[in-house]
Length: 326
Image (tube, rainbow, N blue to C red):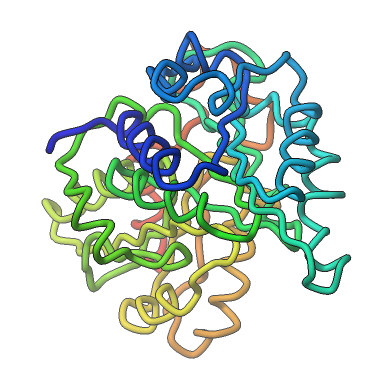
């Protein structure tokens, strides 16, 4: 069926609630309102306010409560309304949720999924368009993932909820209204691993790695490059921690060139880690330095300026020109 990114997540949450009575959704305005982006629409009506809980506006309290529930056998799914609102819960996530498994020598798990709409492109105000993924990818004990399309949105939310690890689930908010054909039954019967990257478009001249909202931008750049006689291989990273370096390495050994793109600032972003690891693993196969295309090292700009901040196909293609000229 044809479904939107947001509805695919809603369907995944619904299936999780149906399959396991220990799954509980928590967040600000997720019940009667159905969430700011309506991702949880109708779920409280169908499952009740004990399973889909409207919480106070207190992110630390949401995650702290979820942590306690997880210790008692529940599988809470928290919604952080916007990316910039996660920081009050940062201490709970990195000091408690991420460390309990290691602290207890494997005796205790924290199967919590924390959904965070992230990134820009929707014309929002301050604190509503950030890309904080590097903070969490740097924290041992957390899985960090980001789907880029409706099929993966459905599959990965189901896998995240069923995982015994805490998962930070980044949802590219500007893709909520993207639509695609999704075969839910096929995804359930033959799931693609949560921590595996996908090669979405094969190519020969250079590899482009992206995740979340930037995947569609990278595919657009590849289409333009193809019309100009250049062949780009596009990889959707999907998992940001752990990272599937094997898939990226295999591609780079064939193409000899790598460009990594994300919305977050380039400085100390995930692109830096990928560049370093692939340089170590593919040094003698690289024909040019690994290039990064990302946001500028500034706080996210006002809405009227965000189109200048967000990487677009032209900026990716500029990097392609530079790497092919090296």
